[in-house]
Image 1 (cartoon, rainbow, N blue to C red):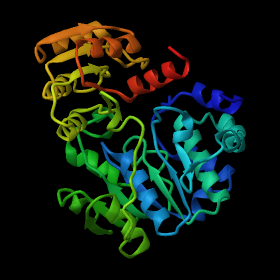
Image 2 (cartoon, rainbow, N blue to C red; image 1 turned 135 degrees about the vertical axis):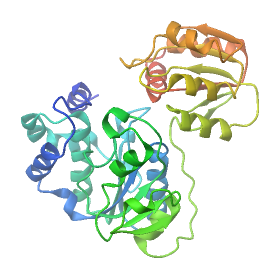
Image 3 (cartoon, helix red, strand yellow; image 1 turned 120 degrees about the vertical axis):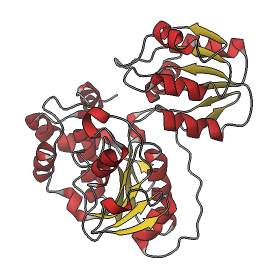
Image 4 (tube, rainbow, N blue to C red; image 1 turned 45 degrees about the vertical axis):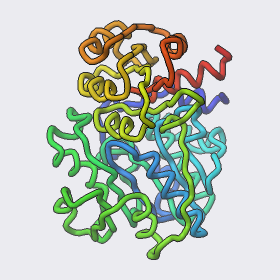
Length: 351
């Protein structure tokens, strides 16, 4: 990595002074308020945001627009996060433009890369930005956009300490990014009453893209993301990291008795995730990702014993995947995007 990417990686992803928009707005002001140069599709929700963002990006590109897009987190490299017209931007250059004010203001990692993305979009004179929210919406660093369209992918109980204790409270936090008069695309009518000053439609990524351009889009571009139902021979990798994500994943899998290799963060609903993963197969290899929030392999294995017929603990992720293949195939590697990123890094290093 270059010096600016190394610096970015060293920043804290979490604000030490709590979530809020003051610092992000000050940072963008120092950059000339690039977010005012284009309208946006803002993607919020619990699961599927990155896939929806890339799908909307592809549809708008197919319709002839110049498009900037940003997603998080990444699996293979930081370059996944920020694209213009479907191609990764030069992040070293983009970060160089924001580094001085970001350091002066003490910006977080997510604030910094979001600001770098928004500045890069303005520099490229894009017609539209498609932006995935980080955490929630109301106090998320992305809540600074001229959003013509907001897409809510879904709502699950997650980050309840920050977003609220009920689905309605969490949905309200996420939908707070909608501006009066904007179009809000919802997965169903459950939370339609939370956006009274907006036009509401039911649908997903296609409906959001078509709402932005104001007409149907004939193209049906294929979209593939690292770590999202990613097939590698007899192995499938997916970053499902909560019960709803696990349920969706297992429903998509070709039917087979999988050997599951998983790492799960301790602040998730671990038991519900394990219960869901047990639908995929009866053997599990528990491991530990590099995240400080990850359960230790042996602790995860202990929790998994009530759900699986055979459980092993292998702390090293690379060896854990190897052991899963020794036990049988196909193998499902899941539970955390951190785990998938660790495996990608190990492969780059030749392990």
